[in-house]
Image 1 (cartoon, helix red, strand yellow):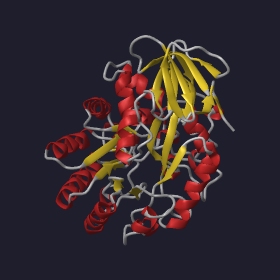
Image 2: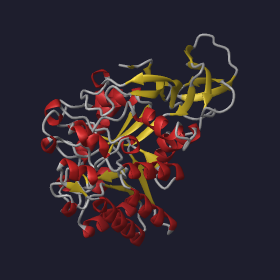
Image 3: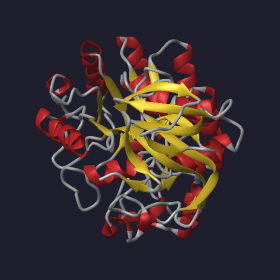
Image 4: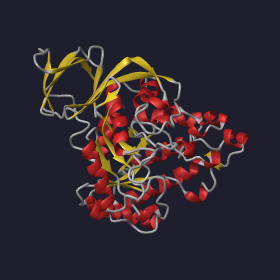
Amino acid sequence: MTLIKGAVPYGEGDPVDILVEDGQISDIGNLKSDDQDVIDARGLIALPGFVDLHTHLREPGREDTETIETGSAAAALGGYTAVFAMANTDPIADNPVVVEHVWRRGREVALVDVHPIGAVTVGLKGERLAELGAMARSNANVRIFSDDGMCVADPLIMRRALEYSRGLDVLIAQHAEEPRLTVGAQAHEGETAARLGLAGWPAAAEESIVARDCLLAGHVGARLHVCHVSTAGTADVLRWAKARGTQVSAEVTPHHLLLDDDRLNTYDPVNKVNPPLRAISDTKSLREALAEGVIDCVATDHAPHAPQDKDCEWSAARPGMLGLQTALSVVIQTMVQGGLLDWRGVARVMSERPAEIAGLPDHGRPIAVGEPANLVLVDPKATWTVNGAELASLASNTPYEGMELPGVIKATLLRGKVTARDGKAAR
């Protein structure tokens, strides 16, 4: 039994006490503290626990960069109660054996609900469909499939995947990148890349695949999810597709909301990511699209890398950056302080909408009596300075190193269990 004293749900109204019993919210009001574990939440905002549709936990295969345990700790410290682990592990999560391993390890660690994402194609090669039905019917109950890191570029394979997904009631999440347009690409195609002598990555490589897949999804009546939207043009395509009734959802990463390709001037590979950091005009458009609901949610694309994969020349560096522990702070800085979202909006894009997209009935729920006690407590006035070496991840490749960011997560609860508190994850 835990009593949260003096929190303000969604940052609205007067402070209240929230009593948590048997994994649920049992009472809300002005409550007495007797023998309960009391969390002093005066000055804190209570939100439903966050859901990340796009996390790389690296296990199995690259436990030198991240494990399900360390990634889960980072997630809990970032306010997350559920994460979806991408399939580009080693071996690839393209069969029931691998997805069940990830699912079981997540349950053993028990800091967040870890949901494995299954590969769309065998070996992420884009040539033939993986065992979608077997993974969906496995103990892992896979609900999302993605070849993230690789695009399902063949339109016939993508159409077949969408057709199967409809029958299985699962979701196909596309890494939108026309590979023939990005051969050798190293940075967003624009003035910065030209000045630095880096091969350009055109926005059309993303936008053309999103347009194609929206047409395919509409044709077969299936659901489509677009990973890490990065361009203003993609937002325009999504707006068009949604207006004509296409069942498409989309995510944007925190780094694409905050950072732009001016960061590349130092040639520091910590800023190398796929899709690349775009122009500042794209960043502005993405913020507006998220506030409007054209882009549905925020997803971290948390991508830990070992030092040897990042501390090298730009062309040889692996793309990706950490995101789980910094996501909320970036959303506060770009969306809340920018006046584009209130705290209800934060709950929508970081908890409610991703839970709805993934079909999680016990996450993204209202803060109300009888609901699951998946909660995060945030100090909106506090700030913190990012130090990659002090983050819970095994890796330290954060682009926010040394930045002072707003918002400090004071506690995270998963079904009433405190999984993170005062900067420390439960072990």
